[in-house]
Image (cartoon, rainbow, N blue to C red; front, side, top):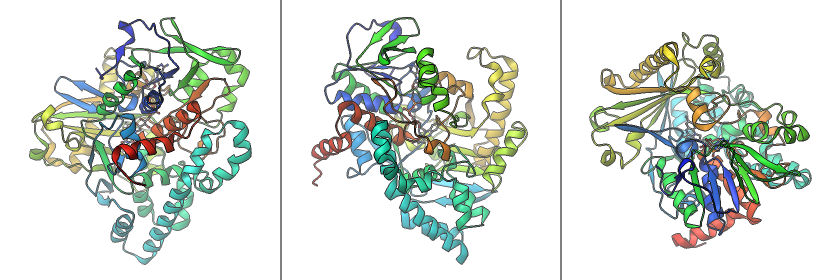
Length: 542
Ligand SMILES: Cc1cc2nc3c(=O)[nH]c(=O)nc-3n(C[C@H](O)[C@H](O)[C@H](O)COP(=O)(O)OP(=O)(O)OC[C@H]3O[C@@H](n4cnc5c(N)ncnc54)[C@H](O)[C@@H]3O)c2cc1C
């Protein structure tokens, strides 16, 4: 159980709160902590049996695994805002373990390419791996685009904070710079600077971090994610559960409450004003402000009462948006140390083809027989310096790929562990295919696996409530970034949104949306105030 949290099943909510937050992912918890530090009493309601959303870990008797956090862009520098933000919401408790400089290894058709930390080093390494003068020119052009995107992206996302009226006046200007990246596909931009398919495959080799292949993804999200990891990567000391473990006491200390097993069935709306939530068991909880971090589709199409949905025509307003892909993940345990097994901290991205879009389409035609379009392998136990103390003599591995929700849909109504033999056989087939991918980069692990368990899109749906078990909320396409409706302030008074759908995918994207939502609720620039307090606490001079 996460520290300073309770189960809704075991307690009566009797106190009153300033804000109710639906969902305990990093956006919901981060927002609640910022509000708590400003004296607000926040009630966080989480439908899952544990807290943390995609940053939760799950345990089996001899192992534990991180579900949705394998690395965060370099965050161990106290001078950077991301460090200061995590420092603020965890009362300075969180610590970060750096990944090595070659933190991502891209393998295309058996050939390995390294992504390395540092803007200059990244370009140099790419040039070393693609030695022709034409490729060097393309890499230079690509680096310039990345840099330009880095300079303009925050203004674009800040527009999401504006109420509709102000957005109409200032929105165009604020979005202009980054819009030219965000509103085009990655492939259309990269095809203008190179015709080398292998180079495109490698430059987009981290596309699994945003879940949309180059022909459909927004070049804006591509740049945002590549830039995010440009200076390297880190992992939370103690694993991703340490995030919730350190944030929840901050909420509790201010008189707030974080509850697991607390599923919200409906947002209560009176005269177009959100006044509270109706829980799955029928109880009503009230607060002057309601924030949903449960995703745009869940909030607008499921949690709001039908009459409000129709009144505002939310279905039409969300047109053009689609869910991101679903995934399967093989969680592996081995009874041996990383040292003995030769496991390293770097992640692997494995591709059998150099055209990610075609590989994706081929896979979807016959997911059981055709190659996975991408296989991601992470070694979380090596990344966490506390692992050996917590689980001596053991190691863990996670292998992720995409999988269509429809393949598993027929078992949607069945309960976990009661889905029958056909479901288990399907999972076993995928598990064996994923294990073969692992052995392709670590052949010494064959015969060493002690435990494995495959999660399906149904697991994701069950644990996070995303309708199609989607991995990253809304798909990061140009249409999504052109959409005017995704913002913090909703058309229902006193109902606000936060989370990855409001800004962008990723732990930092979701947490930053929490800062935005807090700024609206508190009517102040929380980014500035967090920076100021954190710098004082850390003894950093301006
Ligand atoms: C497999 C995987 C790997 C990833 N790897 C990385 C990585 O290495 N680095 C990185 O930066 N990002 C990674 N991500 C993305 C990152 O985890 C997410 O973008 C981010 O955590 C989303 O946070 P959030 O707060 O927006 O949403 P969530 O974490 O989804 O939180 C929303 C919460 O709302 C709850 N909820 C929904 N409906 C209700 C309801 N009716 N009542 C109560 N509660 C409700 C859900 O149960 C959930 O806990 C990964 C994601 C996945 C799935």
